[in-house]
Image 1 (tube, rainbow, N blue to C red):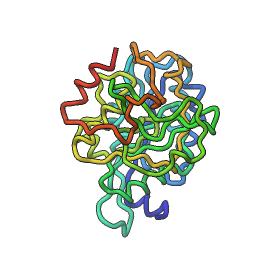
Image 2: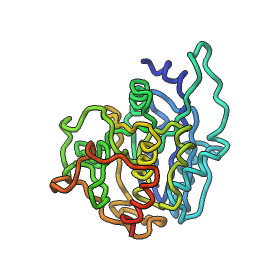
Image 3: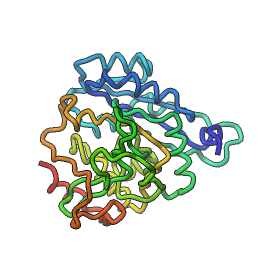
Length: 289
């Protein structure tokens, strides 16, 4: 399907949240505005940055599309507020001759992630192929060493720790390629159907930073929808907060991420269990310090 047809059938609102991200924002915003399938709306949120992040977002996206929040604002709360902003609800008229109703999507981006030019187009094509999929995520590669694979879907082990099935500094040779259902995908580049986001309540604002993506995807699956990774959609991610390249003011104490699944006790992403609607809150109460 051509980008023009994807443009007619889907309305995409991109949300980019910045926090001391001046080192990465120029490439992140340039990648956003040069997508082969452009977004129709974009909202930028600066959470109390002490560098030029807010000004850089404004310069790239326009003053009307950017606003600020307190420095200790969590990622989920920032996204919730962004989706209430006037720039996120601007009417997008249907294209002449477009079949049926348009589907609204939210594309979540970090200030330290750079999508490939066709990333959004490929995510939407994945959605077209599997209409029951309400959340789709890209293959995530390292920002600095672009041969290194970071994520192709996410699971958890029996202790509730986040696992990716990827070894440290594993080089991508297509060994994890292939679109498939997964327990969860990361928030960097996550594409979400807006009606499903609203139905399940979006990210839990009580989870300030880290793990809110797994919790959200778990609830999406519990509501009967599918979560898929689309591996020909690629996003490069610096993981600046997780790697302590900046202070994550909203994070509090966090657990170490577990990438390898070499332990026999750790199920792979495809083996991750389906949750009941009440499971996520109890589950994550055990995993967050």
